Length: 325
Ligand code: NAP
Image (cartoon, rainbow, N blue to C red; front, side, top):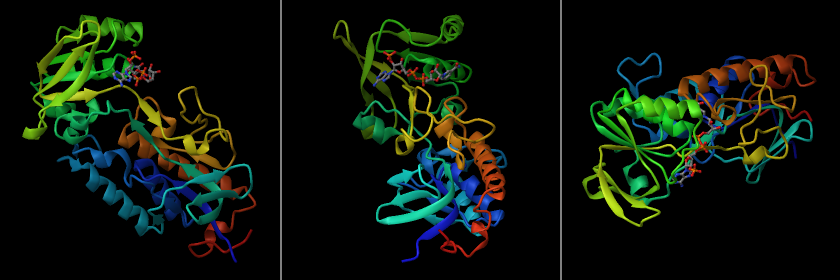
């Protein structure tokens, strides 16, 4: 049986994956995109995106992703809804497996993104997009003049709190210990911001009020005294860390101590021919526009890589590859 071969396989379908697909598609490389279990990525869980250039009125997250998908498909990207279950970067061409399907790839773009950590409350799930958010830069604007709670004690939580303090009427930082994890400089900035107050030793037991379909407050428990109190607020920002979705390549590629793929010179990873784009290699900016830009970089890096490789003709065959080993 002839095995399917590809010049480039893109794993992941957020702004990074679709932009990489658009560029490699336009370059005539017939990219194959595996969308994974959350087609469109994190943006499909947000409401309006107001900071993506070109949409002065804002655009719904899911719509933005649909449009990116459509644009990639228009230039020849083949998009499959399967999830990649295994890659073997030790053999060449690389092996990509999605369930029963196996594809050989001359190059790979890893764009599986990162997932925000959640508190794990049922109310948090139900009110996400209705007052609960994991992205202050995306959703802070909707809380102008309102009261918000930020959960977490790391740099992200403090950065979110400082960002929100510019917009909201008040920001209450809820942290589970009596000491912040964040860097000293961020702690100093927070201490100087009069709109921010800190509720120490507190965990969120519940977010209110699911029956009203919007956030009206949080129920907190003091872990030292056991005291339970309700704090009224209009929004809850959960900032307890992100986890990169790099499990698929762990052990095969260089990752940093938090599991993010290490890249250099644009999108190159420690394995020649394997490139990474978007949040999976970016613990810092994590924006749709920066992810899209790095998807573009990865596509251009792939093109250059293939030009100098034994596989340079692979992309020129019909979609699905020419079956050359
Ligand atoms: P992080 O440093 O891992 O901090 C996560 C925070 O959330 C910790 O305070 C942790 O509490 C708390 N937390 C974790 N799980 C929780 C749970 N289930 N319930 C309640 N609280 C929970 O993550 P991060 O803040 O996203 O930062 C990630 C990395 O990016 C760090 O290296 C950070 O320095 C860097 N970063 C830097 C900047 C900057 O320099 N401006 C901005 C953003 C991120 P404990 O402290 O008790 O563990």
